[in-house]
Image (cartoon, rainbow, N blue to C red; front, side, top):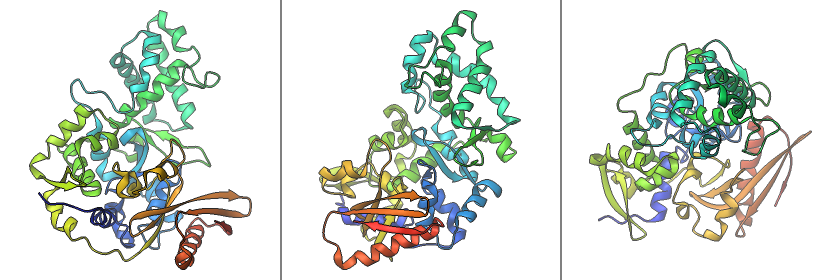
Length: 393
């Protein structure tokens, strides 16, 4: 069995994530569709695309998402907002729909509300689906307004004895702003997204807007019979060598669902050894993995939720596990400074009234390369149409 070392894996993934060099604008569908681009915090997808494409401004990106609508934002893997090609909606949405006796992604936390209401998941999802066509005719600003508007729509569909419970304060941390019904809707919106019933519209200031897939793209979502296969292939191509367990973690789905999806492409896979353990690759990727191209860019300044950093085997990117908590946090990850695909430091930016301040932490002395990193910071700030106030190290 072929043994693959960490450096080869990093170089392979730099290439499959389109980070080995910047490409032209006509590559955008392939780049956004490689494995999707998470958009939390808002703007994360813009930073990810900036690191992969040359000559693409913020205005260009907004046009792709909001005017041309060749890109689409919707809740996808792990229930996160993700930007992907509209033409691959079945892969990034329909493929997440669970099979028989499989749980929906991002709905595990709903159990407290279901117990409180003494109502089953499927019944509440069915009632919400009756209300979702409202979005075919309107756009709703802000997630909290969306939750509560839809919760009010579900209310008359509930048994009389459940309505006061539905309107009770939420048990999920915001009882002054959210009802139990609003919390239930919040969880159930992910299944609705996978069914093509809700997508993100154009952002208004700091507020997202929401409408239906049909309203936004003037067509209904058409599930593809091989959508799950395509999604697993994307995962293997971008994150291989890998395992079904890593697929479950990346998708946020049950191991049962991940195993079902994995088995659908099992004939296309080949085992390899990584750090003495068995992992799998697409057979067609073997030559590239064994002899990956050298990147044209040695240094990269990635945003905190860049797809490249979404690897489940984090030791491949950063061998010192004591530093992992500095890179991958529960919320608000910092950006990562990469040298030849390996994380060598972190960075954060802070918006001020007159521009942006950047703070960097490098774990080893990089004095000889410091100017190269500073140049990347300046390039990023120009992209953001801001003024660089200072770099703190």
